[in-house]
Length: 290
Image (cartoon, rainbow, N blue to C red; front, side, top):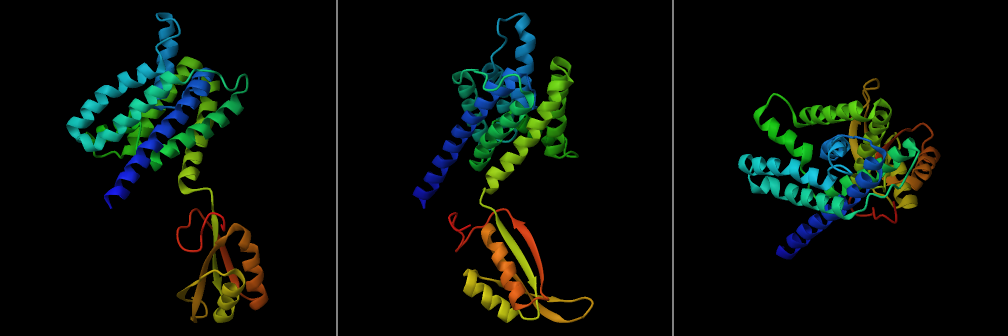
């Protein structure tokens, strides 16, 4: 048991290290190079770097800004929430600053804002997905929102986070203009979508609800032909007032066409509802089969 817990802990920290490295690649090589501000301390750092070029050649590096902004938050977080609440955020912020310092700001995409927004969104989404799978954060506006919510209980953390990040994006509009800000919004959307898909897994399946008067024949056919199990859900038709057993079956994407054909062959009057299933865990659903 202790070995398993230790392995999980190591895996968690490795995912945070990997995720912050991927995030830093997107921040240094695309967001900063293309001057797209997408919220968070990284976005604020891009604004500060641009404004500080008047006094400092090249501006204040992003890794310095990230650490300077996070340090007071961590101290406040330890005082209010305790070390257990903040330790992974501290580790994540240190890793992000390390990678921002280490990865050279080489522009990956030039002169194509749309392609840059799409690429940055995907890369950032994968990085954030890794960090979330490791049950970590990088501090920043996420922690700021959590600490503010500790005092302003009438607002939720997402509401506070939206306000903070929205303010940073607005600051980016004032510094870099509305054109780049709109592409930054595209990148935010792609980041969120990619992170969700990455965490849910890319091996989607299909769920099928089958309403039929021949549930025994249909279920037998599916089990024999597709080697898939089914669940019988007792239901009642509101119009007919007839009790029946509705069948529920989860199959791979490639198998859903075959399932519909089997149902139609067995009972042409059957009613079939097909839904998307984001992730399936359990016997019979290995990645190779789905």
